[in-house]
Image 1 (cartoon, protein in one colour):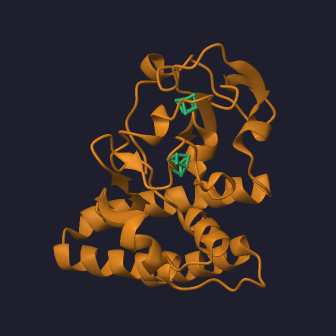
Image 2: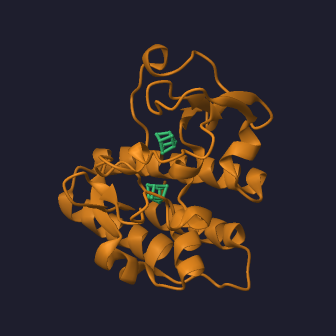
Length: 221
Ligand code: SF4
Ligand code: SF4
C-alpha cells in the first residue's frame, strides 16, 4: 500500500531502475537483524509473497495464519502481514542466531530492503531508504542483483498491477462508504488472492492476472 513520504527526508534524492548501481549491499548483515525486529505490521504480503511461502514450505495460507502471519486492515482492505513475537517484536521467521529462516522465500519487501518502491504514474522505481539500515560501509550493487527476484520483468508488472488495483479499490470503497460492503470485498480479496490454492503446474503470474481480471470485473474497479 502507498504511504505519503517526503523523499528528501528518507532518500538520497535519487530513483533507481533495475540496471542502476545503488549503495545498498550491507555485506550479509553480519550479526545484525535490526530490520527483522520492531517492525509492527509493516511487512505486508502480496499474493506472490504468500505463493512463495506456501509452495516453498508446503503449508497453506490458513496454517501460516496460525503463528507466522496475521491480518490487519490496511487503508480499508484486510491484508496479511508478517506477525511479530516477543518484546522486541521479532519476525516469527527470525531464527535463534538472528538469521532469516526463510531467506530464499522471504517476501518482496524484505528482498529489496533497504530499498523501497516509489510509485508514480502507474509505475514504480526504487529509492534508497538512507536512515533504515545503519550498517556501514555499504557496497554498490546492481538493483536487479540486490532484489534477487526471478522473472523480474513479470514480477515488476505484477507489483504495479497489484498496487494500483488496491489503490483503485481503496478509492472505490471510500466512495461507497459502507462498512458491510468493505468487509465483503475484503473477504473476497483474501479468498481469491490468498486462500484459494494456485495450480502449481501453471505460471503464477498468468493465474494472478486471470484472478485480477475477474476481480476487476466483479468489483467494477
Ligand atoms: S538493518 Fe541492514 S545490516 Fe541489519 S539486518 Fe537489516 S539489512 Fe542487514
Ligand atoms: S521474513 Fe526473514 S527477512 Fe523478512 S522480516 Fe522475517 S526474518 Fe526478516
